Length: 253
Image (tube, rainbow, N blue to C red; front, side, top):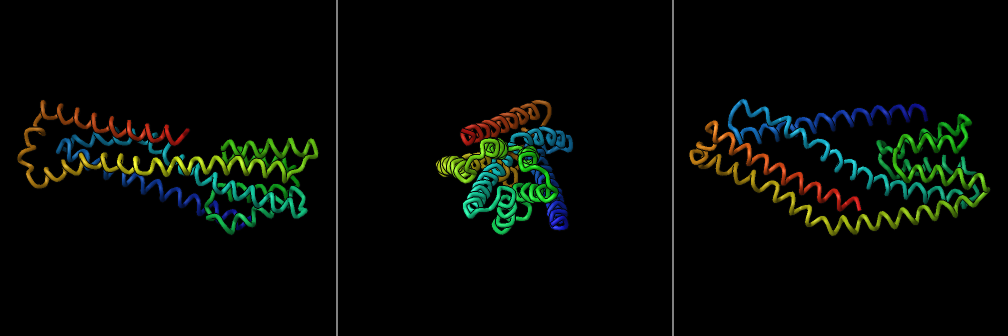
């Protein structure tokens, strides 16, 4: 198991590094495209920091997608726990069994699976289950994991029915996932429209630049042309951020 966890960690780190490099290359390519379209000058490389300023918003969107994946995986994890507890397993063995079954239905680089594997390792080392769940919640950083740790600590203190508590938690998360998926389906068309509307101005400008570049030459002459194109770029980025912010806020509800 230790070897398996180390391999998963290395794979996760490598994948994360590849994703960062890929995002950096795409970001630089898009920034260079914006620089060429709006300024047609080597000094336009100064636009790269402006584009990279979009990073926090894009990271929020990526985190939102990760959270949706986590919720679905966490729901499966809870169902596996409930099934093990109903079959008479102790709480510790139920978590270990759920981790093994979770590994069959989730990707190897799943943060939840990694945290579940660490929890199983701690249980084998005789760490109290409540402490292991607190560590798991800290590593995942999601409210649902914290609630699970609190739930199990409360149920154990009272000698309660674990399966009943977990079933209730699973139903609550399932309802939340269904609501989010329904909202995502309703927003999909609007999100697609926002993406198209974001690309259209660049596509039109690129087409004119390639087919009738002489008409745009006055817009690249400093200082007036530079000021005008800077205003256009600022307006474009502002509208893009506004659209992203609206979608992000609605999906958070």
